[in-house]
Image 1 (cartoon, rainbow, N blue to C red):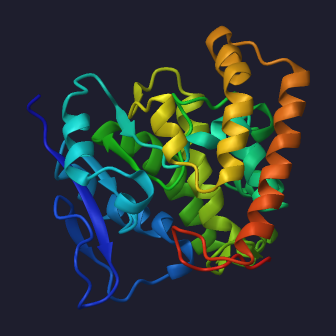
Image 2: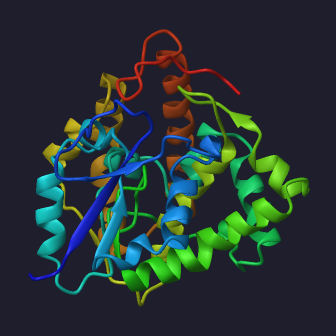
Length: 292
């Protein structure tokens, strides 16, 4: 397919080299609003019209290869084969779909108070979303880490229509209670506020509620999904939950009992995550978890 695809990789230091040779360096030496993480960079890219330089544009962190377990060249090749796509993505945590109904279920267990802070922010920005009505996020929609590449129109709809209004609100009303709440620190392997974890979950929320957006996920087999598990407990949960969740996804039949079971399993998984990585470094950051 003859379309130009560009993936930018942020560089935060003068001597920092590209982690993936297929990506385009995006120098962020000053890195203003570092606590915003990729959210701030995406907004700056939109404001500077970087997304208009190519047919499809994305921003991937230097940890893409480590998390996604594929090369930039392979993902670019995949995107170029998707003639009708508006946005393509790869989810580096596909196993989570088997014990979390959607991004907000997992997010609330990982960062207690996240959903309320997110809803307050959405209300303040007048986006009109009700997070409690977010649908199921299966492999068609579930995405973490902002590993997506979108068309110019997708950038207009998602970044221009969702992320930029949030940025404008935070810039213009930093003392608003909703703005202050999203900047409270939460639990993670690196010190961080709620904000980047809220924004990370807006992508799946957006594409799952916009049926006219042609969203294409990088396909992963069951065996490949197992390879994304970071410890034996995750592999155990995947083995135990896979058949029932696959059947529910296939039939679009998630009853309240199954959703409640997923919530319980997700809570157990998250507690194990906190306990396990409080004593050993997480493979993606090489840091232990600190509780916010």
